[in-house]
Length: 171
Image 1 (tube, rainbow, N blue to C red):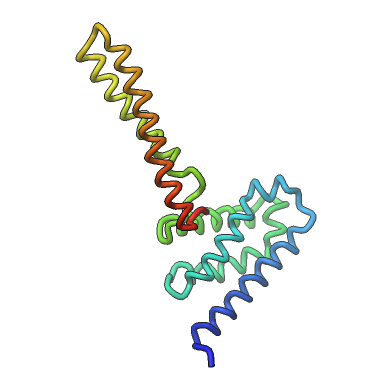
Image 2 (cartoon, rainbow, N blue to C red; image 1 turned 90 degrees about the horizontal axis):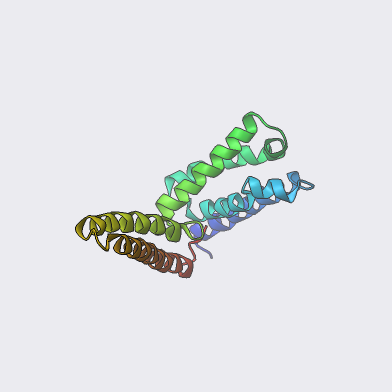
C-alpha cells in the first residue's frame, strides 16, 4: 500500500495537469506574441512548482485556488483588457516573486545582470578615488577600474548563474 502523501501528490499532479490543459485549451488560437508577452509559459512552470511545494509551503497552498480562478478566465484576461488581465498580471508577478524569494528559482542571467551593475558602480567609485589620488594619470586608472569592476561583476554573476542552473532552479 502506498503512503497517503504519495496519493495526495498524484492527485495534486493530476489536478495541476488538468488546470494547465484547461489553460492551453482556452488559449488555443491566441497569437504566440501575446503568450510570450504575458509570460504564460513561466506561469505554467510556476503552477507546477507550486503544486510540488504546497505540502511544505503555506503560501504555495494558498496560490492553488487563486490560480484555478484565474485559469477559468484566462482567455478573457489575455484577449480583453480589464479586471481579469490585471488579476493575471498580479498572479504571475506574485507567484514569480514567491518562487524567487522562498524557493530559490531565478530568471536566466539574473545574477550576471545584478553583479554587473554592482561591478560598474564599484569601478566608478574606485576610478573616481584613483582619479583624485593621481591627477596626472587618473583618467587611465579610472578607466581601468571601471573595466575591472565590470568584468569582476560579470564573473561573479556568471558563477552564481551557473550554480543556479546546475541546481535546476532556473525560472
